[in-house]
Length: 382
Image (cartoon, rainbow, N blue to C red; front, side):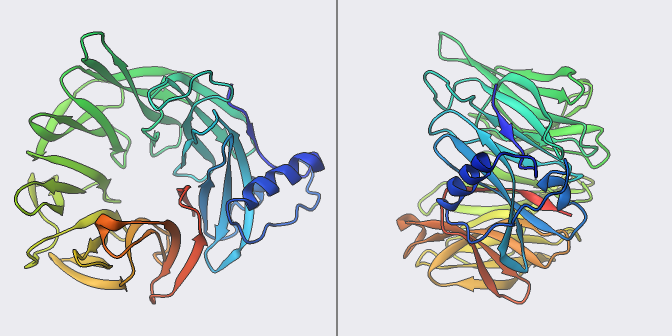
């Protein structure tokens, strides 16, 4: 079983030292000192003490999850480490209530690790208790939390001898329940998000006909197609906080390939370009929503550089510009003061080199979170 070690005051000094040393290799700046607090874990101690950005730093056999204070990047707290198969990190996601982390990962000691080897889906709670919910999930598809933080949706796939495959979406309850929500053989499935009231799960299907949006009730009933999103490949699906709009990116072919950010209004069923743009070539990526419903997206310039813009009434307002890299929005802080971005360096998008994580403040200030490209956003603690 995958081992999750949540750092507490009772942890052995050797273990704590090893965790800090492994994380330091990923470029962290400083760590909290762990004063005696009985059996209270570091994850518990940071609850309710201001917003924190949780990141996961890759290690060859262990990933380290760290909470970063946005106003003091050097103030960092290691909240958990997760062991995994050599060379294959985990995909962790913070629960809506901030009290648990779900992840998919290959267990340590996997004989022949590979992206298509069945993975474990597990949850570690704020006290460090680990619940293994499945051992047949797809590694590369991160879990999707239900709004009440009581269950997760994961994907399971299996290849057939004739080259075809079966895709399933599973609802895994933290109480040990398991429900198959839907099964497809004609398209690949991608879970997107639950409706805010938890009544349904939205998911995308990709097939030779393009990309469609569907929903299915949490009990596995009432599956329905909502909209045809594109004749091409769509991705980066993000549901708005109020559940009324889906933002996504569409790769459009042709003589001059483009990537265009779109929005789908559920009430009207109308899909439209998020921004009215006169640009001859559009390269728009990573739509992200603020808590107040403002849409943010990245626009890369073909000649190099990029901008991060807020979208209102199909008009983009530049929040930050970067002439030396492409900033890809990842996640806004709950108060809208900080945006985590992956900054991809290079003279142009086709010549990308290194990447790293930054925090962009609403006033345009930029702070480096990590120099490593092997860092994932786990979520923001409220």
